[in-house]
Image (cartoon, rainbow, N blue to C red; front, side, top):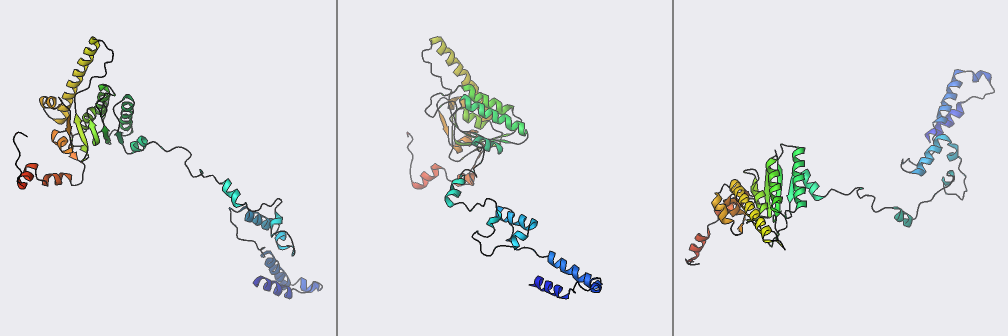
Length: 326
């Protein structure tokens, strides 16, 4: 309204062009300039511009180049407003078309996520969760070497849940050299290796648990550790000489295991050799007493175990007398 009011006021003050004296006067020129500025300030009405809307973008371009197409609109027209400005107008798609056009996989990653060992490797964690077969040994040694190459000063965390070179039923699944290979790789690394026993650490896996940095060997409260003699692989249809050669190799591996366990647990060779005659199972408390680990990973576990009375005290307070022959 203000624009139309100014235009009407400007037109009313413009003198007649018939009088030459008035057209050359300064007041006439000033009034004419104001009326022209007011006309140029008129903007055609169009909806607010959304850059992502092609319809509104088309209207904005037309309003900037040819505003008369928007101002001189037909009063009675069968065409919806402004759609005649398009050469080939396209109406909104139906919901079914929209549903078919949307891909349900557009938000999924274009490449597969990394596998679990790779994710743990970013946290400098190496997880040994299978028996020591050649494929597992290759992966563990490769991860250890990679972490040393990444940073030779940061510690490496080795989580162990393995039955060693045997299965849980005692059948051999790998040669003893698989465990020795990982052990030698751990000893050659410049990094400090923190070992954590979770689940089970049997045979060579127990050796790897005990081979961690002194003071940095841990165990979960309900994990188990066990040391045992090396097993003779299946001989099949071998000759007696071949069986004897394999038996000698098993004895050599046993002596090597006894020496390594004695070194890392700080127990005499005689004691280690004696307990290895048969499978020697240890819970977290016994493993700490034997020297396999240094600490149990449970909040308040050590204080609870220290405050607990020994079994003899419980029997005495309950009035139970243990028989000597039992």
